[in-house]
Length: 202
Image 1 (cartoon, rainbow, N blue to C red):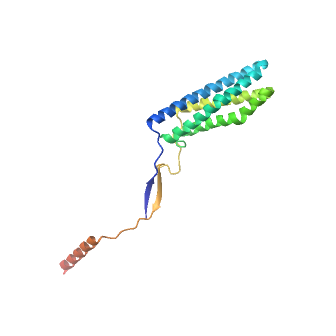
Image 2: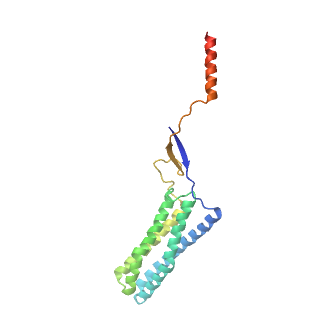
Image 3: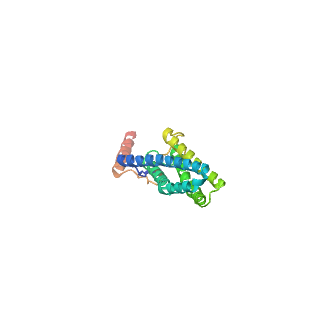
């Protein structure tokens, strides 16, 4: 029994396509960071000027649904495509995995926490909801800043695997290869050699 290696072709982006996706990823990531910064400024203005709080939160909600949400999805999807289509992978390097997780947390936070908070603040602003909204926006800002830092410095190295010596694009399967006996010509040659040795000994 012997072991054979089956190579699975990997998905790779063409150079021009990769550059286009990189541009989209950078633009969307930077735009999200700026968008969240604007939200943080609006949250502070709403707290300091109670008379204009509802207008500020209504404007913030419009920005979240019209720009922050689609830009977040674009950044997350383009980052995943770049990971799958380049040498970096998605679960191969720590910084790539951490960055995608941070972006996913930002998206989920906006959907599950900030969206309902803004609905409540537009209807009836309250100090508790205002503080929660400001804290959520600040947390998103920190997460995006850390994701930007990861993109620049790329710390952490590769993620260790159990079989780290085996290439990731190879699947090793056990294949039974039958052993072939000597060919007819080889058998005749062996018979001739055996007969010659017998004559020599006699």
